[in-house]
Image (tube, rainbow, N blue to C red; front, side, top):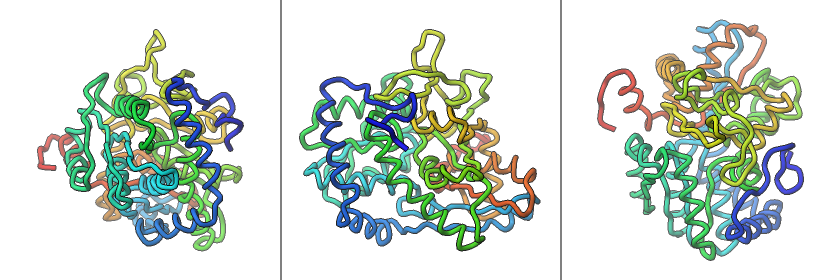
Length: 396
């Protein structure tokens, strides 16, 4: 779906300092060289299947379906991947690409920590040095994932600038890449940033919708009526949507973090509250203040509190192909608890945003309709935060 130089309609592009242009061009050329190479793709398939535990399961949520009394609900179980989230799909692809490029060092940003853990895991696997930038606020609320990254041999750098969250971690990682491009690959974790990152990350994450399509056709003999996924930068959502984009009868629904509500300043629902801007090397939609500065955002989810959205999502929204709906903290926490009790599956709080919207619309659909929800990650990392939200302090 990418047009020339990573343009998606009016969105995308390369808005970067001259000091990064050579690194970005090198990456673009390397990706063009390797992406269709049979040997590269065979190596990646082996990593997916034997290391990351793919294909991930498409699970029929029978109890949810019966309880809600509407559409038949399937869960795409990315939480069953090694490292506990969809992030490993992209990281294994980028790490393999970095190895082909002769790089020996991976750097990454992370919010909830799942991308950081996946990057540290791949670095350990490939024998590479690893540095992960993480906002100080997120370091504190995702202590377990910080420990995992360090256990895997990565250096975790707490970022104290700005709001000390995901956007600041991205800024710091880009700054570090500028300083050391010769041996370093920036393993960006979402479908954002300058071209070719939105395309590279999408292509590696598109394994989600490719599998979903094959699995649902085998199980039901037809395509789903709706595919739902949570959206921060948008990597699991674009991966979940990609192979359904041309199937016009399939609704594509991205579920944004509304935080305390889109009528408040404490929100991260970019499509619902943002406007056109340029940030982190791309033209897209961003949460901005009255002066056009990037606004502070908030969500209970460390993985969704990014003030922008990937350019391909902005494009899908602009042409009306995908819907983007806001989900509040309270709705996400209720969904987190509901799925845990109803199906025995504790979803990541990010994924719970998609579950929350499913709880709203599934009863309005008929029993002969089908819905797929991507469970982008496991909720172990979020138990302490959700308990705190409910007024209970636990270790974790």
